[in-house]
Image (cartoon, rainbow, N blue to C red):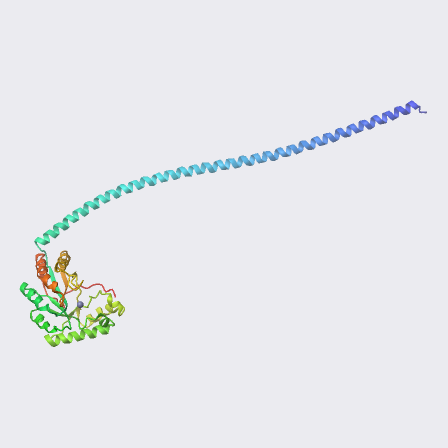
Amino acid sequence: MLETGEGKALKKKLSACVAVFTLIILVLAGALAYAVTALRQKDKAAAVTRERLKESGELLSSAESSLSDYRAKAEEKDRLNSDLQDKLNKAEEENAGLRKKLEALSAKKAEEQAGLIAASAEKPSGRHVCYLTFDDGPSDNTLKILEILRKYGIKATFFVINSEKLDYVKNIYEAGHTVGLHSATHNYSEIYKSTQAYLDDLKVISDRVESIIGIAPKVMRFPGGSSNSVSRKYCAGVMSSLTRAVEELGYSYYDWNVSSGDALSQTPSFTYIRNNVLKSARDKNSACVLMHDSDTKTTTVKALPEIIEGLMKMGYSFEPITPEVYGYHHNTLN
Ligand SMILES: [Zn+2]
């Protein structure tokens, strides 16, 4: 069949139409694919956002739960605090009550003590013994002291040293007083340089006394007392060792529980000495009184009559120390 020119032109137009139509279809398909992809991405983003929102929600809920825990704990703490405060208030009340009771008891005790002191001043009860002791003699004052003791009819104890007046131990002994040993030299740096040094010194004074009165005394007192710490300068532990050593040798040593204070200075006032003794002896059942018999102790002699009379008023009787007398030991400090 023959194709006409018109037929050819129509065919060409038809081909062009098909091409345009195909292009349009392709464009539409591309647009659709794009739209679908875009929608999917949007969905994904929305899902992520939802997920994050969910997480935030969980966090918030956890925070709320923590806050509520914290509030509960705070409330519990407040409650405990208040309980504690209550207990504290109660304890303070109880304390105040106890304090009142204690004050009442103290007042009662003070009254009773005052009563006891008054009673003992008026009417001494029991055995009230006093041992008057004089260290460091004999001296210029020894005979004066002996005369005072004679006048009051009482006996005392003299712890002697190797003095120029040692012969007075005869007077002391014959008047019925106790002659005790103290030291030959009374020189701390010599006698306390060793245990043996003091024992040697003690032997010297013992022999001297024995040569005068015919007996070797068995009662003694350490210079400075067994509690002296000055000996530490010369020999550590010497007093602890000596207190054992002298007892092993058969001696009884004596310290004191009433100090006259007459060694405080060379010659203290007699009122000071008297008051020291009387104040200190007042609350004791027995008294071992430390005084000194040396040339400078004139005020001790002057105080002695008032000391004796004061002690007598307190109900004390006076005795010389004998080896059987127990006690009056200080604690050794060296
Ligand atoms: Zn002495």
